[in-house]
Each structure stands twice: as C-alpha cells, then as structure tokens.
Image (cartoon, rainbow, N blue to C red; front, top):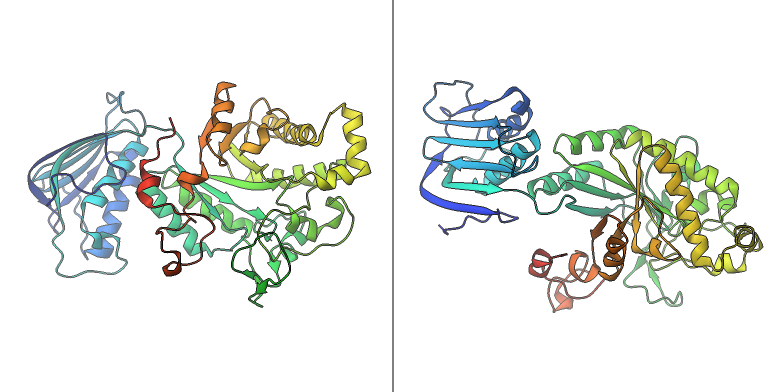
Length: 438
C-alpha cells in the first residue's frame, strides 16, 4: 500500500500510521445528535455494500465516532480531523459539514466496493490507520452541469451531486436555460416548457459558424424539470452540503425562450428552438414587458432555490439585433448610453437591483464586466483569468473557471480519433487538478 492513500483532493496534512481498522458486523457507529445525519450516510453505505448494519453500542471494542468539537476553530466549519487506529475511527469537526467531509475522506479510504448499490461478498472492509487534518482553501468549490443543450434525467443529477460531495465540492451550478432548450417549469409561462423545452433535432459534429452542409440526427430532443423535481434536487443537494446555483441565461443564449414567446425578441418574428451549437444572434429585447417576464421568472426561481446566488449568464451576447432595433436605440438615447455594451451593463444592473432587493446575489460570466459591473455582482471568469483579476481588483467576489484549465468537455488525449466528440482542445485531468487560481 502507498504511504499516501489516494484521496482527492489531497488533504492538507496526512500522517500514515501502522495497522488498519476493519469494519465488521460488531463495529459500532456513534454520533452526537447534530451529527446523526452525517453518520447515517456511512451506516447506509455499509448496509448496502457490505450487507451488515453498524451497531449503536457505546461499549463496543470497535467503533466509529462522529463528534462535534467547537474548539476546532482553525479548520473552520468545513474543516475536520480524522484519526484512524486499529480499534477506533474518530472524526471531529466544529460543524456538521466538516464531519461530512471527514466522512468523504473515510469513504475514499474504504475499498472501492463501498460505492456499490448491491452487497459485495468477500470484501475486506479495512481502512489504513492514518491521522488527517484538512480544510478547504477556497469557499466556492463547484462544477457546472449544462442540461440546456442536453437534458439529463433526474437520477443522473443525483449521481452528479453525489460525485460533487465525494470530492468535497459545495456548489452545483445548474445551467438550466439555453438557445437549445429551456429546462425549468415556470407556472406563469407554460410555453417555456411546452415549446422551449423541445427541439426538432440536433446537429452532428462541430459547428464552424456555417449552416450550409450541416448534418442532423433527425431525432427530437428535450425535457424539463417540474418545480417539484427541482425541489427534490435542491433538498438532495442540501443534505450533502451542496448549494444549488441556478443559471437563467440573459440577455443572450435565450433563443428557446424567444421561440416560446416571440415578443421577447427584437424582430417580432417567430424562431425555433435552436438545433445547432455556437453563438446565436437572437437576444432578449429591452422592453418593459421583457423585464416583467424576467422578474416573473426569477420570482418563481427564487422560491425554488433558497441559497443566495443566482446566475444570470450574461455571456456571448451579440449586439447586432440591438444595433438594428429602433426600440433598443431609443432606450440607449433615453438612458444616455454610448454603446450597446453599456446597454447590456444597464440590463444586468437592473436585474441585479431586483435580486438585491430580495436578499439575493447576482453572479454572471465575465462578459458582465463590459460596460461596467453591477455593484453587488460576482463574476465567474471563463474566457481566461483576466476578467476575474479585474473584477477582484475592483472589490468583487470572483469564481475562477478559465476554460483552458477547467472545461471537462475538452479532449482527454491528444489522439482525438480515439475519443468521443469534444468541444475544445486537449485538457488532461492532471492539468485540471493542478490548476491554481491564485
């Protein structure tokens, strides 16, 4: 066995010790009252994969303990200490979320069969003796799932959240709307899912900006999540100390919404839910009716997602339609704006005020910097690090997500012919793991 067990991410401090702890049907599971929910995950894992229930016997010779210890100030609420000896496993933390991360480390120390959904006979349920102290370096640790372009079933979302939790991530960025599909039920606007959630077919291969010569799969694609299903996802994530950050794209990446309600666009002409990838010219107009629509949508979104951040996209918003729109140009003159970048900034600021008044915070892609940043906004920097640095220097919170280091839809080897279709260049997981945003 390696001196350093394979734990991802690697703990801050890890000291291997001699021996191992073995789980058996005689092992007890003990927890403080506030930690019982965390301990239940371990009990259920072993019941499912090992086929035995841990005891609740304080005098047992072999035991696992989850204890809250308010004296552990240095690791913070998400930090923990884990001590494994031959007869005892002791997890300590100042708060339940810290104990949950201690549990994730313990699960990674166990044999891989711990993740099985059915009993696995003949497994030695042992973990190496070790002392670990760990705490996160960053307060926001998350991953985005794009269900706008490709709808994902509910069970997949639960599995995705499980993987986030296993790797001690605490944000599920849920990309719910796109040019190619609207995925969340909004009761006031049923056509968003009746029309906007479905496209006739999907292009095959990469999009180079030209519509001529494209190949399509001929298969309708779509789906959406009811509000009850959204609540289930949020609750499932919350039980695993993961906050769900919904993304409702605006003013660009909005063709599916405009297909459902053409008056939200700039041309007034009907459009279809997009069947191709790439950047689309159809964007929301800047009429009062459109802001009423957006705030109505956000009111329902806020009711479903209790945590503070709401992602509004803001990326890849072509200004062609605004330049050609008499209404948009009139709005710019009315507001004294010099160009369409400032019009987008005004658009984002207006949504920011709406969210701030309701005790929430806006976060958007780094394009929201163009034309001036809303006062309370946070920035997610995807086009590189420059936007994030500029926002941080201006006093804004920043999440670094530069595509050359963090986009998992890139190729994993340099031999592309042997891999599934990917959107970008070569990005091995080692480069992702070693990325340091500071």
